[in-house]
Image: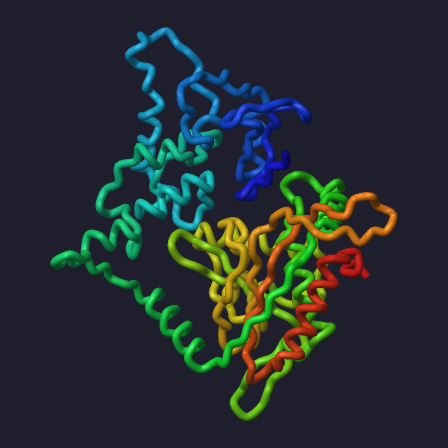
Length: 387
């Protein structure tokens, strides 16, 4: 069976040969966040599987410390790895950490830059976060852990403070939902041709620069705006403003919050340029280094919930934009086989559901349907995106 990673990274080492049988829970490869960490795993060999339950995957892939002469009582030495927590990363410096470590730190309310890493080249892994004991000064302000300190407990309930940023987002979404006459259109997209094109393009790219399905779907959305430009517009009370270029906001989850960095003029950029820009924006969002202009309002928004197994969603239009596109999870479905030369009456196809929310003041139903039809055509015949 195929396995698609939910996290982006660079393959440092493949542990299992193609075609080999693998037990559930056994590691198959090592993924690192930065290409400079690849060399650290050149001689890495996965530990032998045991009957005992395995530890979380991000920990299993770490090379065990080399045995030394001290007595067996000192075996738990790796627990001391978080000791460097007292020496936080310099302000503005890049923090190297696994995706699981980042999520654990965010959920616990820790400043990940204050945690010492025991992985290759100081990379922070899940074990480091689990063993970290923060001081009061290192907790993230506004995080769940920090908020818990000022939470107000009542009879059968607990009130948690809401940050100013969260209140601003809530007010903006409420205003949009109240003022914008939303309507929603959904379409099922067949991804097999797009996946094949992606595989062909990636064959000529290094591992750290591989294209994602999201990159191609973002490019298709920008090109669909050229086919149906009336969707690339805003309601300005007395006029409808049509834009000559498509700037796309990409929703990125950071801890318990969201940011929406913008890819400017996506329609005029190649898929590789879009991929590089999105990768840099996502890294900046996770590290908190995005500038204000990186998160400016674009003319269209895309959010992808497929990684959470969500089939479809109806997003709130982000004013002053006129449309927001939500992508669901890719899945194999059984479809009628239209090939008259085939003996099979059914076929398997990789499908995804795309739902677009429109502002009815700007985009009539027929125009919205035309835009989705143009988007579907580009996704299912992706070679046309290269013209």
